[in-house]
Amino acid sequence: MAFVKEFRDFAVKGNVIDLAVGVIIGAAFGQIVNSLVKDVVMPVVNFLIGGAVDFSNKFIVLRMPEGYSGAMTYDDLTKAGAVLFAWGNFVTILINFVLLAFIIFWMVKLVNSARRKSEVEAPPKAPAEDVVLLREIRDSLQNRNTVVSAPATGTPATPVAGRPLTP
Image 1 (tube, rainbow, N blue to C red):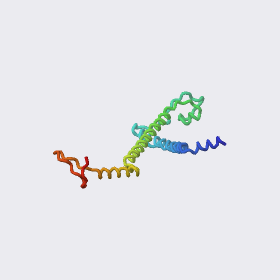
Image 2: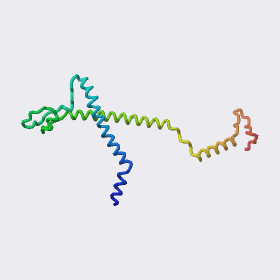
Image 3: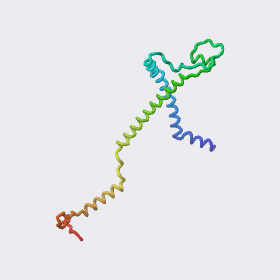
Image 4: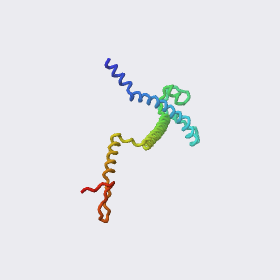
């Protein structure tokens, strides 16, 4: 029973739940990036290059299955058991990674910028009540014991509020 209790305490900690949420959101975000590469970036690359470049279907056949006469596409060849060096799939995944890293970089940069702004805009904390009281006492004592200093001409100082100066 101690093992079950220990596991339950571990599984319901905030960090584990945060990690699970992060993994789920990360998987969904990965699908978004895959779609971005496939449906947005690659068509632009194809347009700029001037042809129909599809990296996911670029490969080199290392070993062809015996007697294979089907289509020479990546899917058909892998189903037939051919050994392929699929460099195009690697390039597609590499583009996905670079885009994902770039997007996450900008997200973190925006979050850090927002944090800095909120730290700057936060008003300073009010001093503790005892500090305020001590400051009031200090100011009161300074006001009560204030003496006008002697002028620079050497004439004696005059008392404040009618109190005589004591040596």
